[in-house]
Length: 333
Ligand code: ATP
Image 1 (cartoon, rainbow, N blue to C red):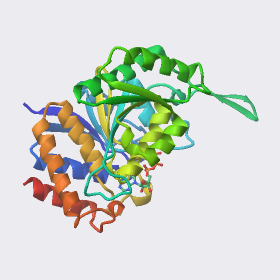
Image 2: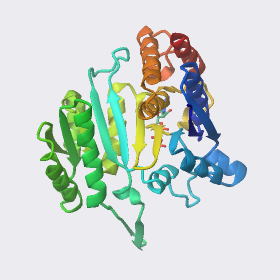
Image 3: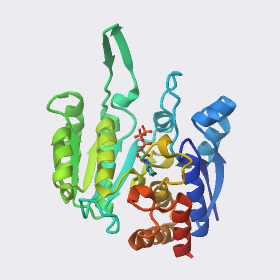
């Protein structure tokens, strides 16, 4: 039986890469039906709602969302739509795998790390207070509950995927209470997984180490802000933002999206790389138990990357988004 999922098309390159991914899913025979919605800034300008009620209702019904990048209008007092979705549906685990592809040449090889970013708190709670006209305070929240579940998920993932090591990234030398709590929970939970190696690193050192020797990292677990920064850095190691997928998992809902934003600078130019969203869709298929279909798509992408003659400009090719899509569909067929 087909599974119905919700799709948000979003802004900038969102609609073009979503169309492309849906066509590839279709070609690969994914057992999916779609409820598709326009959301974000463009939709707000057209119809006055950033995310229409029917779009929320659809996600609440289907509980699985494939989401393309959304722009939150600046200067109108809106909270980030991404943060809103993550909080509204308690999508606490943001999982971002960064893996080198032999066909995409970068100065780094054999990078294979998975970043577990806590998704609901830290400075992202967005609580800022004007103390006086020259002073603003921002609130960083770290709780035992949120830290425990993301850290446990990271260790469980390591156990279930044959991973060897979990690294906690923090700044507990300065933020002794907040990051200190995160780190102490990490150390407690690590004791329950004696078969998995664990260590911790300070965020600044991690940035340097990631560039000097990225192969030392396996699973990383970290609070929200550091996770955001480290995953963009990790994307640079493997060939750029066009190649970094993610899942956002909670207890009841799951949302799959590319790590990159809506890239307004290249929207409508037919040069966006849809791979990050496509690989996010593969993570979704795996989550839904459609592993063969995901493997078929991953295999076709690998072949197109390996072949190297039909790549988008971010990967130093000359192909349009549509030509790249067609090359993948051809390999699938
Ligand atoms: P956000 O704040 O929403 O995360 P951002 O400011 O980090 O967004 P992005 O939209 O992620 O910016 O884009 C950063 C750069 O990477 C831009 O130059 C953009 O063109 C490029 N980029 C992002 N995604 C892609 C993609 N799928 N294909 C090609 N280039 C991309």
